[in-house]
Image 1 (cartoon, rainbow, N blue to C red):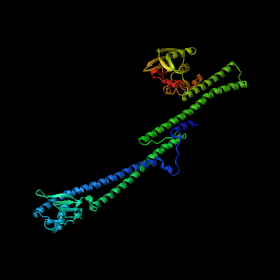
Image 2: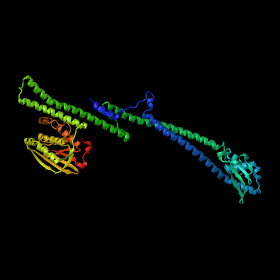
Image 3: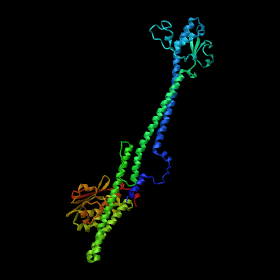
Amino acid sequence: MDYHLRFVASLVFTPHMNPPRHPKGWRRHLYTLGVKLFLAIAGANIVLVVAAYQIYSHSFDRGLLEYLNKADEARLTPLIQRLADGYREHAADWTWIADDKPRWQSMLREEVLGNSRYLRHPHGERPMAGEERSAPPPALTIDPRMLLLDRDGEVLIGPADRVEQALRKTIEVDGEVVGYLAYIPRLAMVESLEQVFQRQQAHRFLAIAIGMLAAVLINAALIAHWLARRLNALRNGANRLAEGDYGTRIAVVGHDEFAQLSTDFNNLASALESVQRSRRQWIADIAHELRTPLTTLRAEIEALQDGVRPLTRAGLNSLAQESNRLTRLVEDLHLLSLSDLGALRYHFAELDLGEVVRDCLEASQQTIAEGGLAVELSLASDVLIHGDEIRLQQVLGNLLQNTLRYTDPPRRLRIELTRQHGEACLRWQDSAPGVDPQHLASLTERLYRVDEARDRASGGSGLGLAIANAIIEDHGGRLEGGHSPLGGLSWRIQFPLPHMSLSESHHD
């Protein structure tokens, strides 16, 4: 019974053409969205962590070495000045320092390593009583890298085998170069306290990187789980909807795109549920409409068969009337079905809408006279539209039948045709009684009746206005109900003028 709705839902949510083959077993889990999201997020962040580690480690190494080398050069300036002063004081001779290695070591500690307070105490080599003794100097890291050269570049102090690696700073006395203080850059040192510190920092950076990597993996797993959980809710809801459970709803959480998608899903489910209710009501109404004339026909025939009623012309007329009513109902249902399928054929041509109205009234002149209907016309001339004359005559005939059936004597009808805002506007206004406002929007629904007993008594099937509305919409127009100034019902029909009409390429 719910086959058609399940089919529509399956078209929306279920891949139905060439479905992909899914791997079985544990490999199936590798293709889930959660795993893909985890791998994508984790992979991207791992690359960032590794790149950050490499860049930070490299920049730290270069920055540290550059800083230390510049610091060495800055600390060599006072040593160069002391060597120049000593050279001047000792009669332009380097033997005072070349032959006195302890003095060389002392000068390095004082000027380069900054431990003069320990070696040159203002009150002698020993601190005064009660004064805290300074800590001993740290292990030398610059002494093996320092060389003293004379003006000819000969090594006076330091490792002669490394003179080619050393950078030289001139020692001048009275504007004359008397020697060179050379030092080996730290890049050339294999073992030093700075390199030990560098390795320690590298270990710290590595620990930080590992911690960041762990945080990245946890974060990726949480994000993937969160996204997969919300998508699973949508998937489960879609599966239930495809199985025919149109009461399915998904909880709307937050205000993001997932929340909007959940809202759209719920709207779709509500629409399908409404269609299901309408279809069931439609089937029940059709069964009810068909049962009434069939029951009457059966009762009449059984009465004739049993001899309860004689076979008279009045009895045959009653049978013919019920048969015609049944035939009309079936034809109306068939017409609406063709309209729904888009198979209702039209023969469009340029028509004068005013002439179509006059032809309809002239063809129904006898019926109008028998019903005592007074018709007032106010039709603008040359209102041309693209339309099917036979179908438009059917629309006007249905409206006329409604007026004749549902208005009280003395009956009045006013028809006006005008041009408004690039459209042809036809107003159909009849006399009392009217329709309550809550019923106006439903009058064009199939089998809708304001008063069930009155409609059946008048012979109406409840499909005339639905058929009229379908034909008008197929012409690109609109049908709107309202209250008539004559006290009854007013219909406003609007058609596009030729320059705004439907493309004739869509018509037969």
